Amino acid sequence: MSIAGRIAIAGVGATEQGTLQGRTPLDLGIDAFKCAIADAGLRKDDIDGILTMPGTTSPEGSLHYLRFGEAVGINPRYTGSMTMGGATGGCLVQMAAMAIHAGLATTVACIFGDTAKTGGVTFNRASGGELSWGLWGMLGAAANSAIAADRHMHEYGTTSRHLAEVAVACRKHASMNEHAVMRTPITIDEHQNSRPIVRPLRLLDCCLISDGGVCVIVTSLDRARDLKKKPVVIAGMGQAHTTMNMEHERWWYVPHQKQALADAFRTAKLGPADIDVAQLYDNFTISVLLWLEHAGFCKEGEAGSFVEGGRIQLGGDLPVNTAGGNLSESYMEGWLHIVEGVRQVRGECGARQVPDVDNCLVTGRGMSLNCSNAMILQRG
Amino acid sequence: MNAPTKKPAPQINATTQPFWDAAKKNELRMQKCSDCGHIRFPIGPVCTVCLSDKCEWVKLSGRGEVLSHLVFHRAYSPAWKEHVPYSVAMVQLAEGPRMFTDIVDPERRYIDEDLVGRPVEAWFDPVEGDVVVPRFKVVER
Ligand SMILES: [Zn+2]
Image (cartoon, rainbow over all chains, first blue to last red; front, side):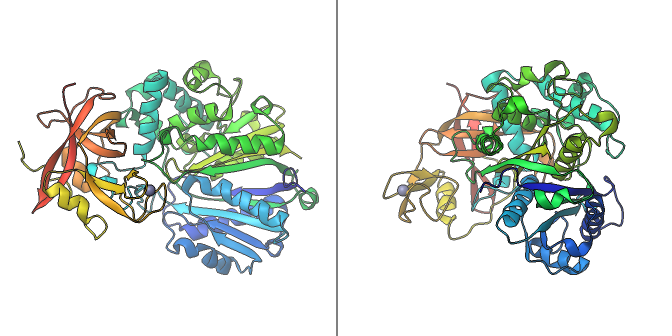
């Protein structure tokens, strides 16, 4: 029997976000966990699966699941940690769904906590195999996305003002989200005047760096129906990854994302026209343009003109990143995209609620251009 | 012309040694699979096409073309601080492999103009002691 439509998100929780002096990744994860089980109407002992993403500042690294389980006093039937950067949240939720579908657990908590802001992390995707590209100055999180933007500009005529549309939309949405870190609206001109970081990317093309915690509780749809909140069904899911960069002809275009999205649409028996609102992983503005093309909201190369005139803002044809995204809400490596997707489907978003949401697309992308996933969240 | 740039020096290990030995002789060499002929980069223990561990370090022409051109206005490591702003290119080498490299004009100055599609050529930078790093410069068509 297909997994599609049989697993649900029963609870979500997030801590305050931003600059949180004195906090640790572990206690932020625990706070988020407590929020999420309360949101679902569950007790700690109902959780029999724990999947975690170690924060960039978590000292336990890949053994983080052990420390987390110990700290909250749970002996899980199913557990583990995964490190796929911004793709981890979506991949862990999918892993939880598969474990539940396989009968290995009933209710799985997926958890992330980090102090990247106050912990002084430098996001620096090392690559180049035995040689580090840093020898040639190719350093920092923005570099690979700058390649993607530069190639998109050369092949399709995309402009920096198109990228600005994404930044402006995210900031507008963050201004309507009291929990967002950056809430002052910006204009396209302000984006254009922001300082260059790695050309063609400017400061306002880049995501924030943040402290915070997020938790998502996954269970069967049957079980979720008996819980406190309306279940949010995982109607479709997909993931696809590449390990190749230099030897991958169109690596910069992240073409495997098309596979992740195609699988999500196929399993949900839906298409892009069925999507009412989308939470698209935005480490940099260019990423949103790529997702729009890969999902089929527009043709390849046309995302620049697609986003013109506020089309991805609330009130536009396809509102994107309605809580503000990584660019303006908080950089929780995509975990808050899942939370906002759930809240939009539930209808909990107040001033920024998209009317009558049946289907929300949520995507994740991590390790620079390497890992990707997609989920379609649906009203239960 | 060959004044060192004082850019960072590599950590050399057994796997990468032939690459750096070649650079010392002002040659760009990469691994060519002895079984299927594929030239791979980054350096790796087996052929990424056929998994053969037999390879020959072949000398490349050092010529190629810029696929993408970035300008770093920020240093992400202390070693690059004094060089900001600097250009980095994704270079398509004539023989097939690609690599990232910092890139300069024929006088070895940083360039702000868009370089995509421009031909490039390797040059050899003695960064530290007898360690030499191959880098690229834009050349006339
Ligand atoms: Zn081979």
